[in-house]
Length: 473
Image (spheres, rainbow, N blue to C red):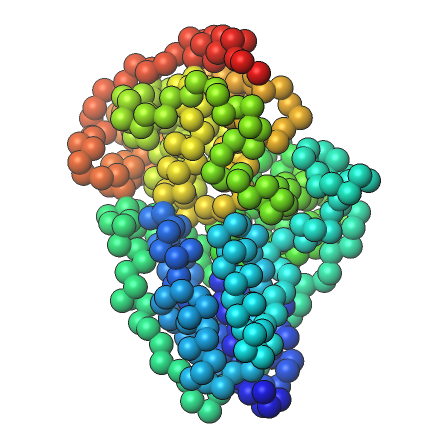
């Protein structure tokens, strides 16, 4: 291919200009650059909320590129077929992209790279979605880490490359290939009326993500060690949705955290550990791709979890009507904002898998449908970690008590009142918004009586521990 042939940059979960290795390299090459987003099976298989949020992100990124004098070409279909067709249409000599690590993407990308190279196309993948590539971190025995603490000790002093600047320019081709219209894809269709409720909580795009990061570093990070667990306070970075879609890179967050640590801000190390936990999840997903599908520890395959989603307890959990205020508040926060405080996530997941003795995949799949910050690695590890079937050095019988957790992390019940309307004379808009977000078929009203617990905190804990004691492994 001639040196003047275009470079196709395949955009995926990396909706940013800065610290984008593939775009940066394309901008430096001096050749026409054609950014492309493909709606393939990995997009079509997404749940309602993450697919809707992805659509918003893609639309915003298209506007960002347009402001640079470029475009985002949209095509639908199997990635290999789409890219080969675009190569034929444009005469492109290269297709570059940033790596993904979930099993479906790895399988797809491997096939795409092989097919393009067979045609003499320069097919390259670049780093950028994690801090450390999964194959670069090993124990002294040459194995991958299965426990977080030694993983942290192994990587926390490693160098992370400084983030790359946004390209100064992205040369346009002589003519642009045709593009689908984003609205025709109807990526938000399954959200229905919930989209209008969640939309005000979305912080969309790279500029908003950088503003979030800057605000967090200038203020909340100092108290993050304790503030990250105070569910009623805005003590976290709120960057999960932006990281999930690559509107900001982990390296940008890491270096900001290092600067805060050097400035003596106490919570910086705790925050850096959270970034490494995200990497740990991706390393596990890379090395053990069954993480989202089956028990990471195979001895749990015979554990007697309930897998019937029609049971009234499961329905009550999904509808945030368990009668346990902290659990219901967390779920309602998710329905209204598309996200859930991490402390609440642990309690919500523990209640489903321990108190209700339900299989973790029920919760994992529900979160896949409801979270705008859904992440394949973090969601899988989080559910298996809480259920006890995943990689974890802690005892398998950890059971979060939702009553004492509320007393400890929401002592004045501010979080509960913010999200649960029943029983309040003048419930806040946040609590009322839940009834605008949920399906009308649920037939719920803020005037309803708040339910009694479907399973009490002590009752559920005792039943879970008894089941663990009688296990066959």
